[in-house]
Amino acid sequence: MKNLQSYKWLIIGLLLVVGIWSSVEMLNRPLWGYLPLFAFWSFWNALIIILGWDPLGNIKQRLLFFLPLLSGILLTLAFPPFPLPVIAMLGFVPLLLMIDQRKKHNFSNRDLLFAGYHAFINWNILATFWVANTAFAAGIFAIVVNSLLMLIPWALFLLMKNRMGHFKLALAFIAFWMSFEFLHHRWELTWPWLTLGNSLSGLPFIAQWYEYTGTMGGSLWLLGGNWWLYIILKRRFDGYRLSAKNLFIYRFLPWLMIPVGFSALLYFQEDIPASDTVKVAVIQPNFEPHYEKFTIPYAQQLELMASQIQDALEEGAELVVLPETMIRVGLHEHESDRSIHRLQQVLESYPDAHIIAGLNSHYIFDRETIDPNFLRIHVNAARDTTFWESHNSAGLIDRTGLTDVYFKSKLVPGAEIFPYANLLFFMEGLVDQLGGSTSGVRTQPERSAFKIGTKGFAPVICYESIFGEYHQGYFEAGAGAILIMTNDGWWDNTPGHRQHLYFGTLRAIEYRKEIARSAITGISGFIDQRGRILSPTSYEEKAIVIRDLHLNYHKTFYARNGDILGRFMLLISLGLILLWIVMEVKRKDDRITSL
Image (cartoon, rainbow, N blue to C red; front, side, top):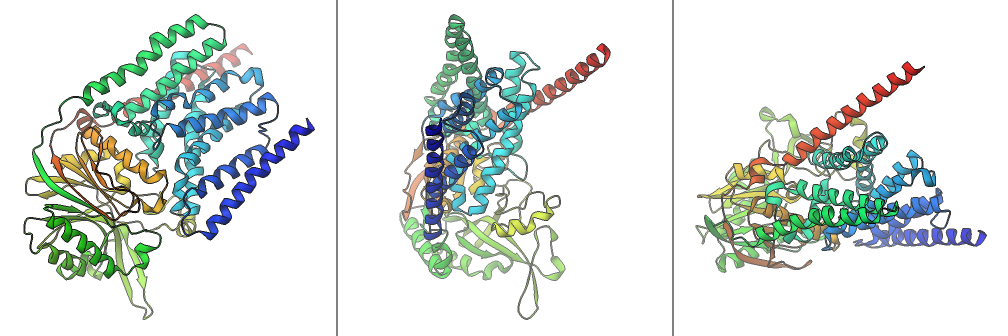
């Protein structure tokens, strides 16, 4: 036993050494790459062992340590860049099997609750560690808080585990998790990156039915698979081998294969015919955002962009797409803005050409026209006060100037929006320290499309591309294709920028629209209606990619109806919670009566 204890402290020591080494390297390197992964994962698992979940201890301690860790690893392997989405059907099985071992190994409710957190924080660390490359404290906050939020559906399921039969429990397991995902897309603290349905983006061939269900359909499929595999393993462990085999053949395999077969049929159907075709150039200027984008003089960046645009136009491009925040614009300056004037000069010899650019825009108010919604105040050394607002926006530009502007409206919590500012006013100092804004940036209430004659384009800015139902508004406004403008270099060369690219393939499938994608650095290129990535650039590459972009105005079932599965699961969740309350009240009444 003493030898095992010495090995335990050896493991803790090794984990701490890796964590400390990673942290020191982060202090000494300008870009961190995978270092946050090593630091977060090592420190977290060392902490768990110190707190008593000994991987070399008794069977209870080993199960509490390894089974949730296995869940976290399996769920991570289901997400891009790994093309293994079906592994997510195993992700929750170790946790579900733990519940059945409650009596045998004397697991308390607190043990099972914390086991869930251990699984979810490992999943968040392993799959989204790269968030810390944007801002270290913000990365820790995102991982810790998102793991806590994932604990809500797990806690509700645990609450009902011994109160309901298998059918209601299956409903509870699926409905609670899908309700969490549905709501996580729709509040100010949103971070739905790890929506289970997103995992199929790594293998879009099996996600073609998203044109009917969106990502909620993928979540339902994967959660249902988890439940069937859990029941099958439970039956086998209980000695019912024949029953387990029949369930595998007649329940699990059809659940697995029918959506895959349906997806294959959809994949090999003909494309929706194009209503219009535009020759589009996507520009990847390759400015590293932490340093180059803010140290290279803007005038020099503008000239480099103008040169790339000129090259694209000479190659016959009709529309040039520039990345997020690439062009600085003062919207109050109108025709006198120097950036717009420079782009007009480039377009002068191409009267039919247009530019759609990601803008880092602002507006300075006259005192008579101040809008208090997103107001920022600056007092200069002379004590003069400037009232202004900031925007992450996109602009449509032709040789006459800036003709239309779209304001990004799905904002990154902390960095672009202070969630629930009135309620969390005491956190203003922390938000400032994390590099965020307590004032926020201007948004617009409805989506809009950029129109060039009869052609409409959805101007999707970065974070907006992971919200499926949100895109409905672009197509209601007349868009026939999607333009994604992003800056994925914040995350360094890690899975972050690849995950973001792959998630965009799901929007192409849901709406059967082609996508042109322009990143400052990361991966630029095109995506077709089937979710196939075409002509991708490499990371840290200066590039211009030109292809025909086909527009269509067909509306899929999902485009017309949105996340009806999520709404249905939310109703089921509310019904199950109400049923549980009624059962608990009845149980207490029966207890009082018996006394």
